[in-house]
Each structure stands twice: as C-alpha cells, then as structure tokens.
Figure 1 (tube, rainbow, N blue to C red):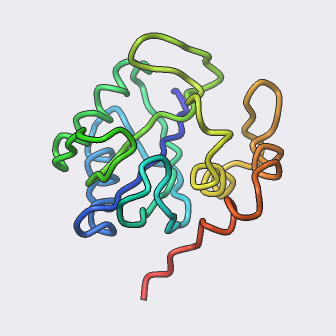
Figure 2: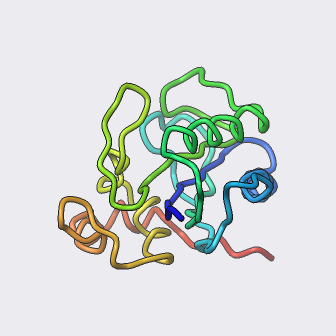
Length: 163
C-alpha cells in the first residue's frame, strides 16, 4: 500500500462543497482511501492576486496505484468539478496536487514529487503539519520550512471554522 499526501484548494463557487465533493470523488475510487484530513484554511490568493480567497486543505491517502495513475485521478477530479485552466495560479473551482508519494522523488514533464513549491507555501505547509509533522523535503522538515516563511505569509493562512 502506498501513502500519499494531496493538497486541495478552491476559490470559486461553493468552496466548502467543492472540497467536500473532491474528497468524495477521491474516496469513491476503489484504489484510494482517505486516511486523514487536515483542518480547513482560508488563504489569500498566491501568484495571481486579483481573485477571491481560497479554502485549502490536505489529505493523507492510502492507494494501490502509481504516482502517474494518481495524477490522472487528480485531473479527473478537477474535470468533474469543472476546473478550467485559464490563468496560471488563477481562480479555480478545484485544484488537486500530489505533494508527497511514499518517499519517491520523481521529476518528469507532468509530475514532480515532492511537489516543487511546498516549501514556499504556508497554505500547504500548515495543513500538512495537521497530518504529519515528520514529513521532510531533502532531509529538512516541513516545520523548518514553515519557520523560515515570513510572519506575513503565515498570518495569511487562517483556520476556517464552519459555523
């Protein structure tokens, strides 16, 4: 059984429902089981900033499929939830990224594991910390990467409380 971590984000439409639907679609796949979910976090847009705030979360999954097959599943989730790629880092109904897959290091045209920008993104590091504080990139813990981000970057990630 393989263990992977996915980052899921949304800033269009019913954001809470988009996250819920993405998790349901993942769990409905016979090859995937969500074993843990992080808290939900609301964050300012990263990259292209002329857009609404995001809801982000991470999930830990167990899977019998390969990283390449998991990428196809993630893309299917995005298609089912009407993701359109118009502007790089722009608004989206859903984004599902593979962050880690076992201890694999992989770099090909469509997929890089660990995800190449984890260490720069508080909105990924904070929910990952909810799942496993011992994750590391290049023998450096995600906690250290988080500590190296500015207070401003960290303060823009706020826990989202469902009323």
